Structure formats: structure tokens, C-alpha cells
Image (cartoon, rainbow, N blue to C red):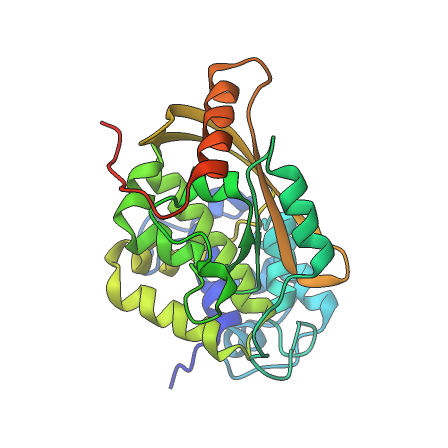
Length: 295
């Protein structure tokens, strides 16, 4: 019986996207029963036996060495991020946190930094499940003014960025290119689940999104890997109008599961002026505001 593991599912998805032409192999006719490469072709390229690779993909082989994983990464033309993800998925080389962990907290120093940045830079801190652990006033005004500013303070009411993108209508309307944003969210979730396989809350989030969003299911099944770094988004903000921001994500020192996310605009641009407007709104807002998408 095929008991495909997360590692096997990723390998299968990656070989399906390649053709023999992509890797310099002959086709031996045009009729192929499977999309992409055959298992034996991947095995040939990686220098392992076809039986070994088949067992690995079907979840019957769990002891792939780092050297074998690197060979498979080369055979499948994986990007550096995809190669790292392959190692994360391996039971022998990947991350293995013991439990799902308790509620995440933001340090006092990081909260001070958020407050200091608020005059110029919308920012927030996210945790290992993409929960918003804290945000400054401008970050709140930019991304989710329809929510309570204090919501991140209570683990029971914390907004989750992944859930907002797929299940919250105002957040969906905020992004002009919502599909690109959604794919980036799913790609990052793939990395988070591989690095935190024992996190039951993260698994529950994936199950919820899979059940409630057909778009999420389709993107999740593609096994795309996309680490957070730098992205440019055009936003249709109901209060500030259309603006273009650069989103950057930074790891928080001494807090390996937390990230600082910032949003900036080109100095002197209309988008920068719009952020200044939001900064003022953030300072004066006392409660969630009505949210209507910009046409």
C-alpha cells in the first residue's frame, strides 16, 4: 500500500513538474503513463536504485542520508529553498521539535522597537504559525483596521495571517494580486509545517484551511515552497487608496520562531504619503473601523 509521507509527496510533486527534456534524458516514445519524470528516471539521475527511490517516495524508507537528499535535489533541479525543505522533511536530518509548545510571547524590547518604528514604518511580529503576536498602530491600520488593535495580546483572539488571507473578505480585497499573495502564504506554510512537524495547532490550521477553502487546497497540493523575504504588493486600501509597499521579513534574534515584518514605500512617492496618512489614523484610532474595499 502506498503510505506517502510528506517527504514522498514532495518528491512526487517535484518530479511531476519535470520532463525528460528538462534533464537531458531520452523520451523513448511519446506515450507516458505519468506526468513528468518516472521514478526510475529520478533514481538514475540521483545515482540510487529504482527500488530505493520508490520506497522513499512511498514512505517505506526513512533513512535517507544528507548526501542522498542532495543528490535528489540536484536530480530534480530544486532551488536552494526547495533543497532545504527536502532536508527539513527528512526524519533523519530535519527539525524535530518535541511538542506543539505553549503560547508565544513578544519580548519587551521588541515591543519597544515596534512602538518606535510606528511613526514611519508599519510593522508586526509573527510567530511560528503565522499568528500576529504584536503590531504597531501603523501596521494595524495598514493591514487590519477592521480588527481590534488589542487582538494579538490574547492568544485566544490573535489574528492569523494565513487565515486572514484565505478566509477574511477585507484582507482578500486588500491585495490587488491576491493569487500571488495567497501562493506566497501557502509556500511559507509548507516551510513552517516541515520545520514544526509536531505542532498540533499548526496542523489544525492547515486542516481548517483545507476544509474551508478550495483555493487553498489546490495551492497546497502543488507543494510549492516559498520562504518569506522581500515582496512588493499593491494594496487597495479603503482609507489610504491604492499604494505600493515593500514587505520585508527578518528573523528575530534569540527568538528563532518569530519574525519581524515591515512595510515601506519609496520616499517621496504617493504611497509614502499614504503611509503617513495611515500613521496619523493609527495614532488616533480608538476602535476598529468599518472596512469597505476600494473599487
